[in-house]
Length: 342
Length: 199
Image (cartoon, each protein chain N blue to C red):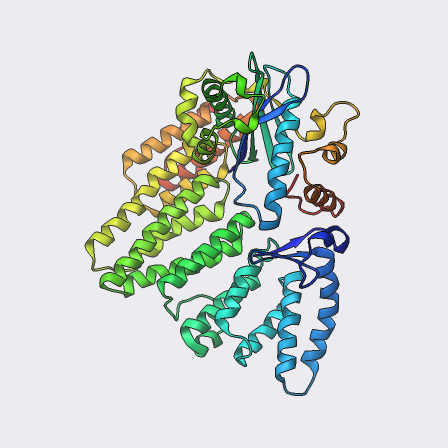
C-alpha cells in the first residue's frame, strides 16, 4: 500500500527508511505530505521539459519520466497529463502493462486517489490492453469491456480492488462504476462459456450477489451499492444459459432481493437509501400481490407511527414512508388511500 | 456501519480508572495509522468512561466516531464503551454494552480487576465481530428492558464532556497510554486540518 502521512521531515525523521525521506515497512510505503509536495513541485516542470524535448526518448529519459510521473500521480492523482505520459510509455513498451496494474493497485489504496475517475478509466484501459491487445485499447469510445472477455481471476482481482477502494472512500461512485463494468463482463462470461468454465463464472456471480447484499446490510446509506445490486438481475436477464441448475440458482438470488429490501427497510426505516432500494427492487423484479400488500402494510404502519424521540428522528422515518407510498401509488395507479392518516 | 472498539473499563469512585478488557477492529485503517488509531480508541474509551456518572448512559461524537458509554457502576464499578461510526444504530449499541457487562461480571471475578493483564475475556472479540451487523442484536434487545433513549445524553464533541479547564490537547499530551508517534500524528494532523482519522 501507499499512504500519505501528515507532516514533514521534522515529524517523521526518527522513523524514516535508510533508503530515503519516506517510511517503508513490510511493503508499505508512507510518504510525509510536505516532502511529497516538495517533490511534486520539482517534478512537474521537469516532466513538461521532458515532454517538450524533440529528441527521441532514450532509456535514461524514459526511466526519468516513469519516476517523475509516479511522484506526480501520488501527489495529484487526477493529473491527466502524467497519466497520458504513462500511457505513451506503455505503448512504447518502456512500461509493462501488468506491472503498471500493480502500481495502480498501490495508488488506489490512497484515499484521494481511489475516488478519481481518471485512474479507474486508466485501469480499464490497461485491462483492455492486457486482455484485448493493442486494438482494444485504441478504441477510445469504449470505456468498458464490451469488446473483450476477462479471465475469472482478473475479474475477481478487480472486484477485490473495488471493495478495498469503497472501504477507504465511502460511497465511492467511480469505484462502483468500475464494479459495474466488471459485473457486466462477469455476466457476459456466464453466457459465453460452457461446462466447468461456465460453472466457475456462475459461482463467482452468485458470490457477487451475496457480497453485494452483505455490503448493503453494513452500509445502509450507500445508494450506489443499492443501485449496483439491483442492476445485477437486469444483467442476468439479458443472457441465456443452457445449464439449468446454474440458471435456477441465479433466479433464486434475484428473487431473494425482494424480501431482502423489505427486511432492510424494516430494520433501518430512518435511512432513505433502504426505501429507494425497495423501490428499485419492485421496479426490477416481478413480485406477488401478497408481497406488495406486505410492503404497503409496513409502509403505512411507519407513516402512521407517532413521532418518536430524537435518536432516530421519527419525523424523517414517517416522511420516508410517505414518499414511498406516494411512489407506490403512482406505480400501481392506486388512489392515495393512506393520505387521510396525515 | 461499523464497530471499531469494545471496552470494559473499571471506573472507581476514587483513584484511577483502568481498562480491563478491550477488543478492536482496525482492518479499515491504513498500515501506518492502525497502531495510533488503536491507541486513541483506548484513550477515547477511558476518557469518556471516566466522565460518565454512575448509572448513566451517554453518547459522544468526535469527527466520524461515536462513543456510546454505559457506566453501570454497582459493586464492580464497571463501564462499557463501544466506539462506532455514525451510521451504527444507537439502540443495538447500548444493548450490546449491557450484554458485555453482564457477561463480564459473570465470568471474570472481581479479584482479577487489579491485574488487567491476567484477564481473559475472548467473548469481547466474538461480540465485536458478530455485532458488526446490528441486526444480530435483535435477539439480545428482545430480552432486555426497553431502553429509554430520551435519557441518553448526546454530546457533539468530546470537549463537552471534559471538565471546566480541561483541554483535549493537554489530555493527549499527558497520556501515558499514547506513544510518541501517536501524539505526533494527532498534533500534526490537527495542525494541517487533515481529514483526521485519529480523532
